[in-house]
Image 1 (tube, one colour):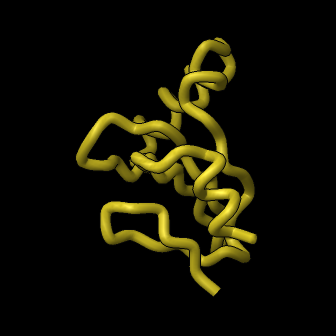
Image 2 (image 1 turned 120 degrees about the vertical axis):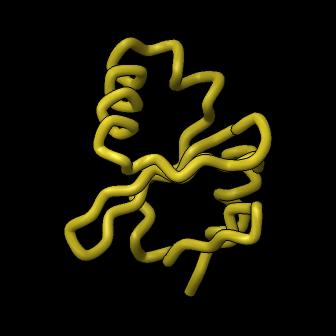
Length: 80
């Protein structure tokens, strides 16, 4: 099964490690460091507009961070 994360993108629901709200999580230094490292390694998949959440996935040994314009609550509802 797939989870539609907006911007005509979908990820496998079985690969989702977490769905996080940008406003709450980016205030943490650890999260900012995580984003910086992910950007340097090319693991961040951007969105076209201002992101409201991000989806962390792991599949086939690759970790990806998908930025989404949808809220974390909306993505969680879609996942269930």
